[in-house]
Image (cartoon, rainbow, N blue to C red; front, side, top):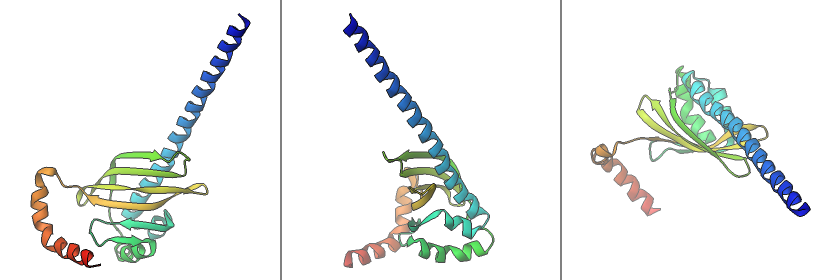
Length: 174
């Protein structure tokens, strides 16, 4: 009887501690999701208000931006060089997140996101990776892509084929 009581007590402690750990982990993840969302929301705000300094402060020093054009794969400095004239006009681009998903690595140091964005190009998808550096989340990779409705993909392929056939041929030569 005494063994049964001890076993029941230990089992109860085990399940309670597991439940508390899960709740604490869930709370931590929700807080971190808010921090990552703030970085992404700030990214959109700083672009819309042409705040060059704060926009690029959100990127890690070693980061990559992948744009909608096949030739747009830039490190931070290259992206800054590309973006500067746009920001100098007083408004770079205006994106609004409509739906966002965020997941974390098991150690909590990396966050992956994908989101649907309302843009001047209509719906686009932003996706990427953030790294927690010190106490701040920094963008390591950002990928912007245009969405193409499946019913229209053949039309789009016809339009882009002459341009991208040349790019494909050039890449195969390397």
